Image (cartoon, rainbow, N blue to C red; front, side, top):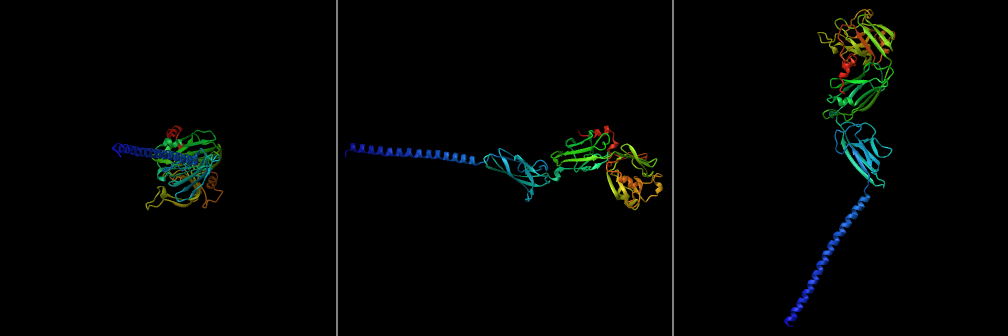
Length: 416
């Protein structure tokens, strides 16, 4: 073979090999691109299939997961959009079930009652969308602790019937700094239409009353909407409550220490005149308008508890069965039956340590005594006016005795 022929053969072989290599290279690149495209289509199909299987229902649980200081009345709830609730389970951390109810339209759920303070709660909710696909949501939260919450202990009680002098009195278990915010969360209304205004005694007591005594026979409603109200820095209210009480007949009794008589009027008419014995010249009875805040058929009265002590430290008196006792002040002023004094002192001389005494018998069962009659015909909230004792007027916050402030003074103590 000549050189010329050899060169031509090598060139042809080279071209053939190069063609093969070129074809191989092109074929390999085409397969990789096709695989990538195929992979993209497969993922899209997977995503589309997953989307078709996912429920459109959107569940919202409140408070949000991990919350603390949650309210115990209104905070906990479950709602759903683009679907309906099918099941909601609420439990404490130890697994105790909390009763609740799904609404009629199956769009919301809430607990049946008030929650406990300082408690961890868990909620698991399920909902279906219009295609029957199920969605799930879970959350856990902690309710407000006693250290970070406040409550108001109130009087009178729900459903009670009281006298015309009974204020609504609320004593808070913690000092209130944001008085206006708290007072705005408390409303008192009367079926009589009387305007009711609150007055703060210090930072833990709020009393509310009208300008004049309540109208006899009216109905008074107290609304406490304090849940979530910040009473002081980081301390929140937890009460959501409505209280209703009735006002009875209008009974006002006037004690005159000069005449040593008490005149009882009911709805403007005198129904009884009773001889009394008020505080002695050394231990005068407070003057002013006082409200009966408690009644005891019998009670113990120990002088040492109100400052009347002998040289031995014991009370100047200690009577374990005082009959028909009705409290007029926090400091120990009562109007009560007296069986140990001579009958002649009633209507004749003032001998007590500051209380108002009525003739009575031991055991509190004699219906024929003035003490029995007055106790039987009096109710918490009745007014007892004491005059001509020579002593000072009782302080408005000593008992439920805010009536000793005129209206201008009373309204000046409101925070709103």
